[in-house]
Length: 356
Ligand code: KG4
Ligand code: ZN
Image (cartoon, rainbow, N blue to C red; front, side, top):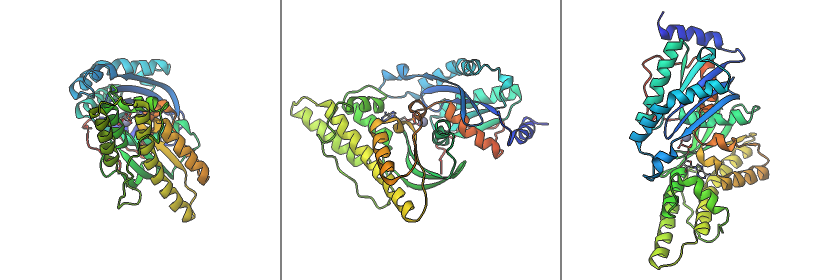
């Protein structure tokens, strides 16, 4: 029997069983993260090794450095995740790994590491889409949440408004026509002279600022639920450069607050349009957030206010589960396992993998 045939049999035997423990690894960007998750909902361990120190000097993620650092950290982080869960590799029912989207070298490091472990231990290997992982972080924080629900997926490379019809089944409602929200935050941070990664730092700086200091444009778009952040970003850059040229001191907190407010207002407004349309159609929508930008405090505040106003249940992942982690990969993997979605040893990294 080949490895894949044996894996299929095991996956079949695991279907519908409880107490299924999945060891997951995430290496798509600059975090080497491993976790053990039970039944897609309970975190038994969640270990994150961040490479921020290694990339800070360069103002962004350097792919070569990321791959090398993942290679050095994978075994240690995986062993730590097993140890914290009080398990050995043989105790895991299945293994899971992010295979895209992300940096090809970084992804390959994780994929190859887990292929090796899965083969050696004779366990099924579940290939997980990183963005599906972000959406699944909600299952870890909200045990009662089940599809269908709507989800605003906002990260460094994505700003999507999606309908989660079932586990692993998505429909696109709207998306950014240019920059992703996280990307825009990172660019604004750079202009303000804040070190990488900028998004969280803009968020902190904005806490003491006046969001009405700078009035930023509101894009008009054809797609009813689509986003655009390039106009906001350019207006922001021009305003900052203008102040610098005039020799004015930069009121950084006010600038950060204005930028944060404009981005979050647009995200919330489009989510609000979609929710109102669904309510008008007689549906009872449930809203969730996902991705690094969903850690943003202003976005959480605005979305909470919106959902309270509309009387729509809102799921916010725990802040540490919004950014990249292994537990979200383990959560997504559980539902894929239920559908028999497992990989063979020919699994490859897919850097431009899509959610929809
Ligand atoms: O989901 P994530 O960790 O990685 C990707 O899959 O892209 O998202 C990272 C992005 C970065 O652009 C980062 O600046 C942004 O999320 N981010 C934030 C915050 N925390 C992370 N942006 C705004 N406010 C935050 N608190
Ligand atoms: Zn991510």
